[in-house]
Length: 90
Image 1 (cartoon, helix red, strand yellow):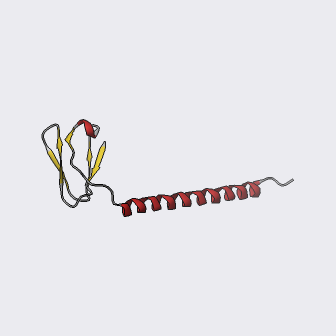
Image 2 (image 1 turned 30 degrees about the vertical axis):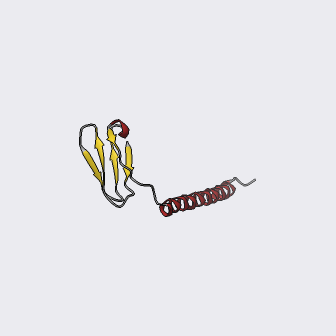
């Protein structure tokens, strides 16, 4: 599937091989089936993702990765504690 997002202030039309024009409203994303480019004849300039939005995405990803690393450390500590607690006494 091919996804196109319109980052411009006005609607943009994508012409398909069938002759149909799919209009993408500002800020909207449209998914095209059949591998996208195989059915798209003309694709207008859809602009580019705003830098602030791209930075926010990068910051969110970094935060999730940091949280994931912290959780992995917590799991390792808890597993060590569990092994210690369930080890048979000698």
